[in-house]
Image 1 (cartoon, one colour):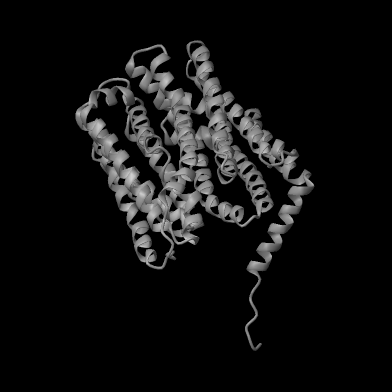
Image 2 (tube, rainbow, N blue to C red):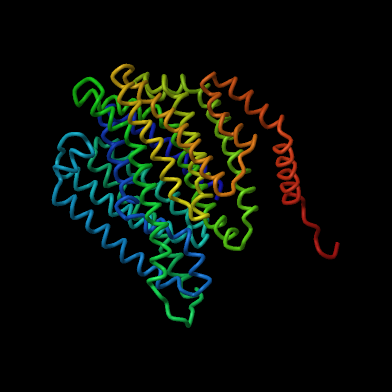
Length: 473
């Protein structure tokens, strides 16, 4: 599974490089907006219903009521997804303006609508598989999608294909990636426990909808937050449409490597959620807190160290691989690494609030960051240009992370020196990669708690790697 994850992230990195090489920066900006719209609008327009699966599947599975729960959630998903697809088909000019700032060809907008349908189906299957703790199958789904899209996308662009065909390549890869998940669900469904007691949908909806509403608000705010800087670049940066789209392309190039960390953190968060939920439901709340603390510290140190190594190699990468076409992207990389690591920590840390069914505070934290981001972009974009957008996003993500820690502490998560260190470590990248690496080593060596965690980890690895004695010898 680890090997698949590494290969998948490597393919995503390779794909991003070749897209930047094969497309001009304005078209790269259009692709960035189309892809982000497809992937980010889905949880918003589904009202957070499929996203509730990882939290409640275990609860209803052990009670024998999983099938009626899934049927109702699937019905709601189909209705909402179909309605949104019809809206795109009926109002292509509006959605063309919404996604790209200007009306586009009907075929491109329609392809975006098909992409939304494909990602709705994929996400529902993926959430089901993850909620049932079929981690290997979930990893295979992501792996297949990444491999298929890389092959199809790069091949299409190498044959001088356009943006519309690239979106359809993404659709084909997404549908293909559903096959392992569907196969696993069909095979395992008959073995699920079934209760003889009648299922009462009203209590289910009363419990699920507050969670789903909080998840919907979080998705809406986080997606608006994620897109706000690029939309404000399109609308507020001086210049014509082509120049602003090119600026988004420069921004995209500076995030090719850093966003890999966010995607990895998202995967870790999704894998963790069912296990944290199982421990929480069993009453092991202290275990949830301690496990999360260790994972957050490991994430901060590993991501900061990886970012430092990447910054050392970045000048060669932009000069040779990206052919010196994205100078502004290189200039902003230290800041994009910092806020992408903060986003990664927030993505994993918020699992605590969702497990505790206090997800509305995630939305509150993101709302605070969104307000700061919009306000700072409004001031800094006209003054500093693209760099102003990056500075605004950096400060806003610091606000989100700080607000999230405060919310977690309100519901039993203890804030300590480890939390302070893991939050501050990414910011050392602004002082240079070598200073950041030195800070990482100091943080690991200077903390008694961290040294104890390392000793436990080494003892575990030694036990697992020790040759097993053969019976009878």
